[in-house]
Length: 267
Image (cartoon, rainbow, N blue to C red; front, side, top):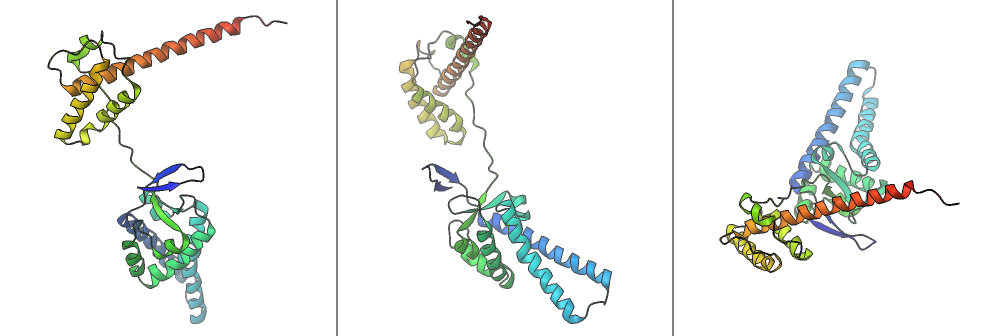
């Protein structure tokens, strides 16, 4: 992850694209560009045949190459704020070093340098430059002050606390509302990340949190209750009771508002 501090002193966590993702995106763009060039040349050749002399043909081919390799990519990047066909497929976007959207200046510098480092040198210069910097920047990115970031990030679902059936009778009469909010958040974070911990670390942390929470939960759970089951029961019951309390509070507020609306207006 890459941290960017905005003008409002807010830290943004951005995920720069890996070298592999950028390479696949670039190959898709290059393949699409060459298919367009070949398609246009074949279509014009079949339509006009030998109507053009060699000099005019070379000029038209040069204009077509410049249009497809420079003008169109720069225009697309400017209009879409850093997208292209390959980046759309891979879920990437070109952004400035401060995390903002690129403008024509950035797209133009990247497009002009791409002719040298990607097409003329067959990507060798872009490869060498990207390998030796942490954001996989090519030369055009270094000069333009840009880099490629992941726009689509998979959000992993966190595990929710579930009340163990064996503790239903006990938790129904237990007082769990005295549990401090910071401790409750720590327990919820542990439950959400427990599957990613090693068994030894998971057991030790569950025991530590259970010992800390037991001072605020009355009565104590049945003897022999596993620490993780105790934590799941406490957090799930606390969550359900807080939710029920909020529902009751909203219903009372709605009734009060309805009664106020029924009052006659005073002159």
